[in-house]
Amino acid sequence: MALGGGFELAIGCNLVVASESAKFAVPEIKLGVIPPVACVVLPRAAPRRKAMEWILTGEEIAARELEAYGLVNRVFPDDAFEAGLDAFVGELTSKSGPVLMLAKRAQMESYYAAYEEALYKAENLYLHDLMALHDAQEGIQAFIEKREPKWRDA
Image (cartoon, rainbow, N blue to C red; front, side, top):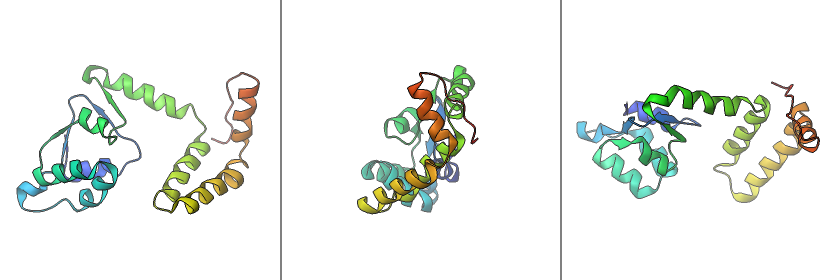
């Protein structure tokens, strides 16, 4: 269960995984208060009317429903949660750490920017920060040579 502040914490994360039986909710309305972080983040992360429904009803939301709306990245069966999580983490950690950080940074810095400014920021990161890394050159060279890359900038 990720309720109230726990759900607000989850929706503030970059990636969210859950088991099939996981439930989420912002039940504050039932206590006569509101979930302030959810009021700001949910309408930006999910369809506005669904966010409104979740906040105004305080009802539990299944992990699969949140996955359908893009608030949960992966849902794993309860009995295979650890294996699914390990595979997902393995998928991420097989990539270059610094390149992952730059991809995250490019998204975060451009998210609320106007299109032209966002494109400028992402291109600037690409040309100056990313291309200065060994891993960027290694990834391209490994692709050309049809081999697995050997990340060094980790």
